[in-house]
Amino acid sequence: MGVSGPIRVVVAKPGLDGHDRGAKVIARALRDAGMEVIYTGLHQTPEQIVDTAIQEDADAIGLSILSGAHNTLFAKVLELLRERDAADIKVFGGGIIPEEDIPPLREQGVAALFTPGATTGEIVEWVRTHVGPVAA
Image (cartoon, rainbow, N blue to C red; front, side, top):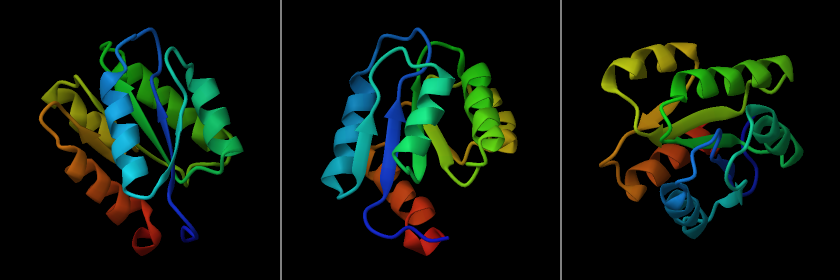
């Protein structure tokens, strides 16, 4: 199933982390690149994020996690997507994620992880390549 029309991305800040500048920068970069972006705001639960992604017919979910709860939060979002028959929604994310946590997260199904130093251009290009019509 390919993406028809603009790529739709939900950008979310799960958990108790209150630092959302990076998420807003990414949301703006994706929007400036012609994607439809739904920014959920702070303190979202995995259930709220998945509900939003399904209701908005999103192609991808981008999670910004700086709180250290990345292992738990990514796993829960992926689990809920599978339970809701929406595992075709790609999950990617960024934040303060230790290098040793990246391979297990990728094995669980996180499509891509961007750590400090990643550019908005890299993230936009990854979404275009892996979520857009060519990736289908």
